[in-house]
Amino acid sequence: MKNYLGIDIGGTNIKYALLDRAGNILEQDKVKTAQNKEDFLNEIDKIVDKYHSQIKGIAFCAPGRIVDSTIYLGGALPFIDGINLGKRYQDLDIPVAGINDGKASVLAENWLGNLKDLDNCGALTLGTGVGGGLIVNGKLVAGEHAQAGEISFMRVDPNQDDFNGYAGTIGSAVGMISRVNQAVGNQDLQDGLAAFKAIESGNQKAQDIFKNYCQNIAGIIFNIQSVIDLEKIAIGGGISAQPIVIEEINNQYQKLIHSHELITKTLIPVKIVAAKFKNDANIYGALYNLLLKINQEAL
Image 1 (cartoon, rainbow, N blue to C red):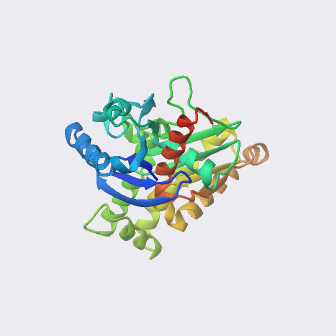
Image 2 (cartoon, rainbow, N blue to C red):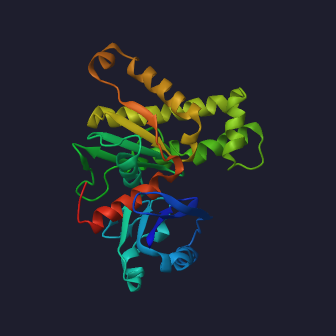
């Protein structure tokens, strides 16, 4: 029996998995994301070639706006702008679907995860940037231009004139880990485990950076909730596997909710939970999007 190939294109890694119809991962791996178009496409081609005889569909997710399997802009990977994934693999004569990574994460959690069957919920993926996906009144929110949920472009600090003032930089988990490692003298700035070891050991510099980061994420969630009013929001990305991340984001969010009497009395807070699928949410969501396409359904 043939299965499905899910490919999650991220700013740091390309993660891929062979999955069955029920969403069970049969095998998975990842490669570093190339930083130019030619090498990037070669890596994708290698993955597809490896599995093409075993699959009956390919499910992609990627940063940027995706319409009819064509990627526009590409978020942290601007060189993938204009790539038509469906056309590139049309000779395989199997369904190909693409979806924005943030939208994939909320689909995954709403399908099989910690947002299962909720009509009003959201997901944030904390990685190189900040991905977002929203389900309102039981429908995935795409928006007029298929760009709803582009949380990375939310302006967080108006005092910054460049992209450093936007959520994509301020909310970058990769950036936070790098700052922590640099502050404590770790040689590998991308080593997430080393960064969290420093945070949990009580290193003051590490804790200050981490708490400030969680405060910013809580602020982003606060802004989303004030506009959309969700029941629950799931936090995904690699760092969500660390329990202290959800704990501290909740702590900072409660401080915001209780920072002013009018806010406390007016706004019902959203429940903040870890995504069930952690770093694999986008793979599951990409598959669910493909299955919806095959069945001609829409969430």
